[in-house]
Image (cartoon, rainbow, N blue to C red):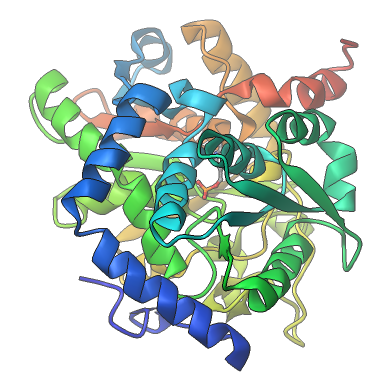
Length: 394
Ligand SMILES: *Cc1c(COP(=O)(O)O)cnc(C)c1O
């Protein structure tokens, strides 16, 4: 089972970090290894996932979308129905329970669009833990609603003014904070990225998606699906769905954000157009220029707007266990409207990337194939953005 003991998935992953972080990471690794085996922890997590998050989420047959596309049968794994509106709460809650067991009283996190920040503020609020969220000042300006939500939930939002004032700068600041306050503080990272053991921990907590899906597929389809499709930002909803199917004959497809097109350079598709490099303590595919400078990214969905990707995805790419594709903003907006109108489900713009890819492929795959897509979140958070794009005023 990967990663190996040093945190590698083949050549990807590891811990490319300053000496000062070694202690914190190895403590986290040791404590996690122990806690995850404890029956008490498992029961506690199951309890909150069931009664607080609302799991299991349904596997829903999208009949009208299937009829419209005249191809493969499409099923949606409804993570949009989780409390707070996306899969991020699965990981936030798991790590909060972990922090609680470790006796940490203060939680810090990074956030880009604010979705992870809201999930962390929610879970920290539930356990009465102090919560501080680092967020680029540019993102604070763009995501006012989520900033307000975090504050209502009792979290403090700390503006980051360095670099491009966005997600990658917020991660840098959160790491800096953690180094100095590791005795009292847990850093709650939001996706399958960063140094070992984070990519593994986040994957494990999100795997509940795939475990449920496996049972539901047998029950509702009578067999495992032919394809699993999910959008990829850092890669946590995709790995959560894929990982429990690793040894099965099921094709994995991750969909990245092509933004204004791969050729335009304005995109967020490191697996499709990046090079191997190091970002935030892990070796993986990264968007960078010839000198190794991290490139700026673009996507209509803030949640996919990250120049790196989880190391396990890089391993899946290299070993050809998964395929990766990218869809552009235009295709995404069309798919967003299509799902809203045919199924009465307004998806998050991130999730609409997976829909857009299925729109392209359903007919080609053919009617006797079954595809399950992770509907990672709902679109409520994107209303202002969508209204702006369509020239509507709210
Ligand atoms: C944050 C987010 C994503 C991207 O993150 P992953 O770690 O790649 O899953 C996708 N969908 C939604 C709804 C999100 O909030």
